[in-house]
Length: 218
Image 1 (tube, rainbow, N blue to C red):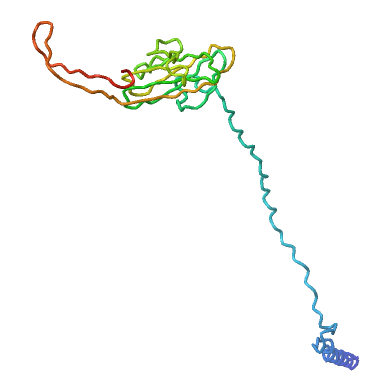
Image 2 (tube, rainbow, N blue to C red; image 1 turned 45 degrees about the vertical axis):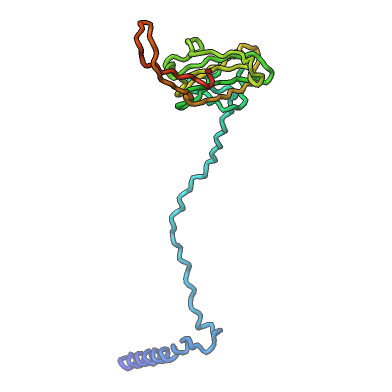
């Protein structure tokens, strides 16, 4: 019995040695790139979890701001007065329109008003001293007159001591709009002064200065 066990053990040892020697036969020998024994197992693709992209808000189209409509009848108040620039303007029917002019340091000022079809208009002039009380019902410094002496203009107003900013309000009493144009003329204090002795009513002499005005208000 003991001999039998020894024999079986010897056979197992021999078989193990044979398998160990034959294991090299299964080894990969890179003699050919087509040797199937040399094929490496293909790795499984790695699945990498990526964060979902943050959604971007879509662009909202912004509508362009429409250009304001041009109102041909600006000058609705003294604060919104239209500068006098010798250009044709429109005044609506049965309405008033305000204008302004800076006469600077000029002593004289003339304002001319013309209409395309010689319609009847009128305007009132307010000196700088009247700036605190200007309305269509206020007492103006002066009013326009028909300009009969000059066929080039329909109406005019002439002022002296006219330094500073003046305002004018044109009134259209017609039931239709009227095209009109305002222009101006200005000049400095052109005076020639002479001084001499005079005899007063009391018979006493006094020094008198006489300044003649030789410009617009001649």
